[in-house]
Every structure is written in structure tokens, then in C-alpha cells.
Image 1 (tube, protein in one colour):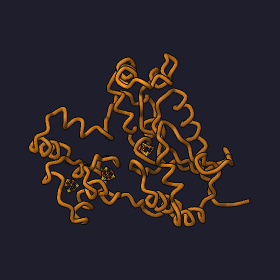
Image 2: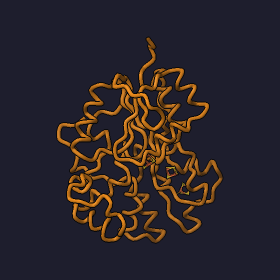
Image 3: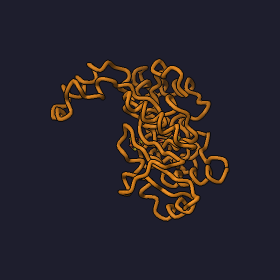
Image 4: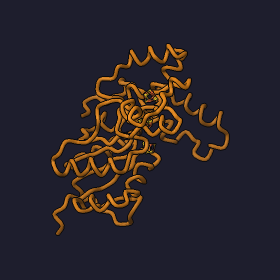
Length: 262
Ligand code: SF4
Ligand code: SF4
Ligand code: SF4
């Protein structure tokens, strides 16, 4: 019998794009497979086993049945890793926590005709639209941020975990990587950017390719959010627009934290 740790993938509320990044690992997959056996990965294989040591979780926790499921997974797994902004932060779907089920329903179905296929009072999304990060429900041992994750970073973090090394997730802002890429700052071009507070590690692809950073990897540990808000204001954003920029991936609603979790 193999003595390698057994890895299983699980998806909750997500687009499954982060699992796809793992499927796309290419050569780095060999380094990962040298250290683990993948026993369940719906996006990549038919075989399935509930006998696993490491659980890799994609997606936000939304419904009561999700809470039960993630707790059972946590009980079984000796290591639990989250992948992607949905699992790490609650994802962009967490924005819906700002509104009531009725308001969300009206937004989806009244403003976007053609979505009726899943309409109905029994739709669990609208009955319990409280998206949470996995770490707000169970203990998480490691997080690979991003939307989607970077497949090479996934491999590096998994290998570091299994070999007892420090996790290679930086705690400095995206601006550092952006400057290394010798980009002209988005602010100087008339745009807005979350780079000063966003956690680096992605290589700053968004400002490098003409976009803006939306902090999909979350914030650095000690972000200068007030100073950053002042910069956004200085460049002409209204308080509402500043809030929109800041909450795209990082909407925090601490009142929905489950009692006794962690
Ligand atoms: S983090 Fe982004 S890419 Fe990954 S599952 Fe969520 S929405 Fe999809
Ligand atoms: S474009 Fe964004 S990430 Fe790059 S230096 Fe300016 S604020 Fe920082
Ligand atoms: S530049 Fe910002 S939005 Fe783009 S991948 Fe990096 S953290 Fe995410």
C-alpha cells in the first residue's frame, strides 16, 4: 500500500476555475505526484475515495448543508488547504451578503431575464445567501489565494507543506511586483488600483496587462487601508466608489461568523 498522503479535492460555491488551474499544472504535476496520491478529484478523474489525509477545498460556504459537509471533511483531514478567493475570502458571491434574499432575487431575475431556470422559492441560494470563507467555519492549515489560483504557487505551497518548509506566500503588496515589471502606475494613467494593499505573489498580471488590481488575493497582513482610501479619494473616487473597489473580493461582514466556529 502506498505511504504517500492521500489528497482529495472538494468544491463548494465556486466556478471550479481553481481546480482547473490544478489540472493545468503540466510538468509541476510530476513533482506533486511524487509526494502525494490523489484519491478524489472530480474535475480530473473518475475514481473516488473517502479515505484521504489532505483535503483541498474550493468555494465558499453558503448553505447549512455546506457547513455540515465542511465540518465532516475537517474531521477526516489531517491537513485542510483552501484554494482560491471563494474559499479564502468568500469570493465575489460574498457581495450578496449585503442584501436580503428578496433583494438578491430581484437583482438576479428582474434585471437579468432568462435566469429563470433556477428560479424558485426552494432555491437554496436565496433561502440562505450567506457566503463565508472556509476559515470562518473550520480551521484552515494553508491558503492559496487568487482568482484563480496560480498553478505553480499551488504546487510550491503543497510541496512546502509536505516537506515542512515555510509557505511561499508573500506578505508585501502587489505594487512591489508591479514596480519590478517596470509598469507605469495605473493611477498615473487615470485609473484606480488596489495594488498598495493587495497581497503579492501573482506577479502583478493585471496592472502589467493594462488592467487594475482588484486584490483577488486578499490584503497583506497589515494593509494601510486608510492611506489607500485617501489616495483613491485624491484621484477622484466617491466614498461609494471607494467601497466598491475595496469590497470586490474583500467584503467583510463579521456578523455572519458562526458561533463557536474555528
Ligand atoms: S476563486 Fe475565482 S477561479 Fe477560483 S473558484 Fe472562485 S471564482 Fe472560480
Ligand atoms: S499600478 Fe497598481 S500595483 Fe502597480 S504601482 Fe500602481 S498602484 Fe501599485
Ligand atoms: S494583480 Fe491583483 S487582481 Fe490581479 S491577480 Fe494579482 S492580486 Fe489578483
